[in-house]
Length: 218
Image (tube, rainbow, N blue to C red; front, side, top):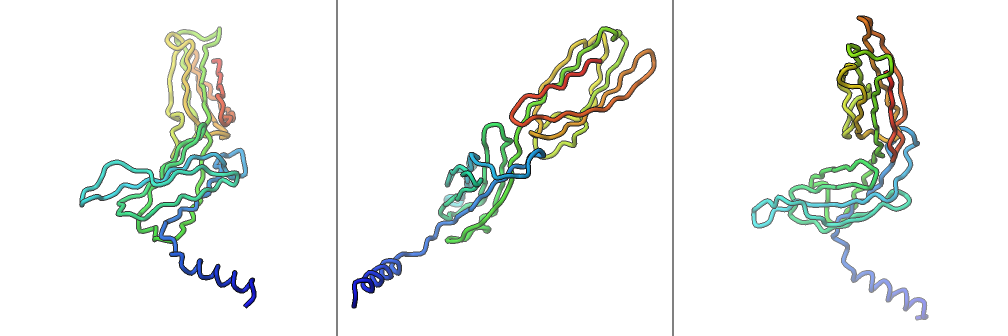
């Protein structure tokens, strides 16, 4: 028997002695959910897979990490863990300037030795500063009504409720809130002067990872 055949047999013997992996694998891929891009992969997202276990018949309240990884240039990473007596699994996704996400899993979704492939998205964060400033011609009895027109979703964003101000109490008003990065934010306002009301509509883009100012002089 030649040398090459002997090496091949030795390799087969070694491989044959290896036990198949019993670890569970969550193969994760993350894409950008912003309106201003074509959903590219997102590198640098910290992914932490956690479990809530039952020990001695008692449910532990804390979620314990079982693996932590960071998405690569392709927006991907593998989270590897041993199957235990878990009641719930949870995937925490976070990164600076992005909205955090939490996704819960049924332990029955994972079998020892199997790979579960999962794709999700992350929303970039923007900061919106709304600055309402009374003009030189604003009288004490003039009234401003203002609201944004976006529909709140799963992310904490500005309230779209009406806000009402008058010239005597709100000459210069400002507040700051989070918005979805890259989103076009429509807003409307009504000004009542001398018993006559005029209605206006406009919009701006909440620039991702930045503070965008909506400055309205009324």
